[in-house]
Length: 155
Image (tube, rainbow, N blue to C red):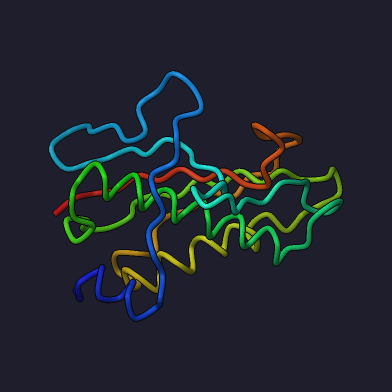
């Protein structure tokens, strides 16, 4: 596998500062010998970029995909802070995405694709294409459009 940071540079993607915790929890929890469970991250980046609103009412699928992309950037920032090196990741095992959705919105998987595509581009199909669930919900903290959590296996 190629160096993750080299790929990020080529993509002109910078990891944000890890997001501030929004409650009483651990951003990344180790379990077993090689697994990390990452608490859900929203789309608010340290530079003030965020995506607020409800898919199917206030936001388009494309805006939701940007939210999911930002969520994954925040997850990668937390993983970098915990491991010191994203190259230690063997694979992403599971992605769970929550999408703030209007009652008649049914495109949650397309929204979460915004984050899944980023993992695929950075880590490749074998490591960056995990099992996934995309769930619609009637509300998320602070009105954010999306929240994503991941399960990671280390090398």
